[in-house]
Length: 390
Image 1 (cartoon, rainbow, N blue to C red):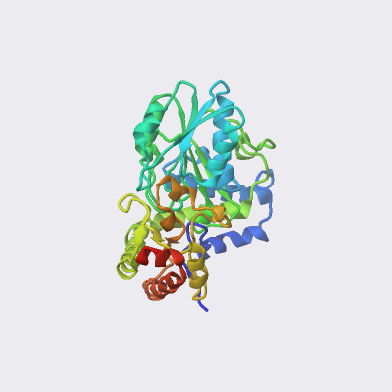
Image 2: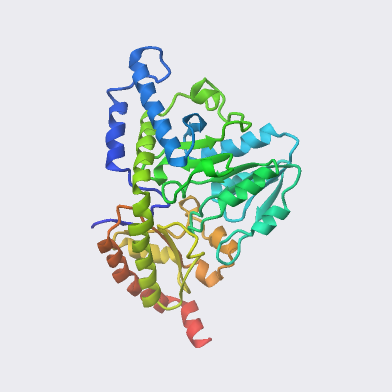
C-alpha cells in the first residue's frame, strides 16, 4: 500500500540531497571538527559551510547561529539564558497556543518563582496584541511567541511585535520551528533577539536544531562543557546532522516559492473540496494569515482518532494535532484557547503538506475522506442527537 503523507508539521521526509550530503560523515570523514590536524579540519570547514547556509536562510550572520540537538533544546536555551541574564526580572510572557516545548517550560517556571502572562487568542487563533502590549512590565525578562502555530498554521505578526518588545528593552524570542522554510524570514528586517528552528521540520534529519542569537544579546549556555559553538553549547558537534541541516536550509530557500504557490494551491483544493462535500465541517484558524501548507479541519460529532485510524487503512497519514501531545484524550489546548466548540475540537484533523505531495494524492484524500466521515457519523450518538434533538 502506498503512503500518502500529509503530516509534515509532525516531521518530514529527509530530502535525498540531504541524505547524500550527510553519508560521507558517518564513515569516511569521521574526524573531530575541533582537531588541529587537517583530517579534522576538513570536517570543521564543512560545519562552517553548514552554519553559513542556515544563516543565509534567516538573513543572519553565521556567528549568530548555535547548533543544538532539536527545537526544544533551542527553546529551553533561549528562555533560560534570558532569565539567567536578568536575574532580577521575574515576569515572563508567552501565548496560550504555544507548542509544549514552550508551554510546559513556562508552566514549570510559573511554579518556580516567575509570574507568567499567557496572551490569549481569538476565535481565529489570532493573537490579542493589545493585551500583550498592556502586560509588558519593567521586570519582564523575555517575551516568547511562536512565529506560526503548529496546529492551525496561523502566523503571528512577529516583526511588528518584536519591535515593540525591543523598544521596551525586553528580550524577544520566537519559536519558528514551523515557519522556517515555509514563509520568507529576514531577521535583518526584524527586532527578533532569538529564534529556534528544527532540522526535521524542513526535510533535514532528526536530532539537530539551531538557535539564532542576535549579536549583542546577553547569553549564558544551557549545556556547559567544551569550547564548541563559541563556548555557547558544550559537546562534540553532531557533524553529519549539522551538514544535513545546512543542505536542508539551502534546499528550503530554493523551495520557498513552490511552498507558497503549488503547495498552497494543493492545500486550498483539499480544504475547499472537503468543505463542499462534507456537511458540518469548518476550518480552524485564520484562513488568510497562515502557513501555505497547513489546514486544520473540524468534523463535528466524530472523534479525530477514529478518522485517523480509518484513513490509515488507505495509507493516508495525517494528525489530530501536535505530535508532541499525541496520546492525550483531551482536546487540543490550541483549539480550546481558540474557543472551538467541544463537538468540533474532538473531530479536528490537521493536514500538513510538503513539496513532495502531488495532485493525485490530494484527489485520493478527497475521494476517500467523505465516506469515512459519513460512516463515523452513522455510529455517532452526538450526530444523531444533533439531527433529531433527542
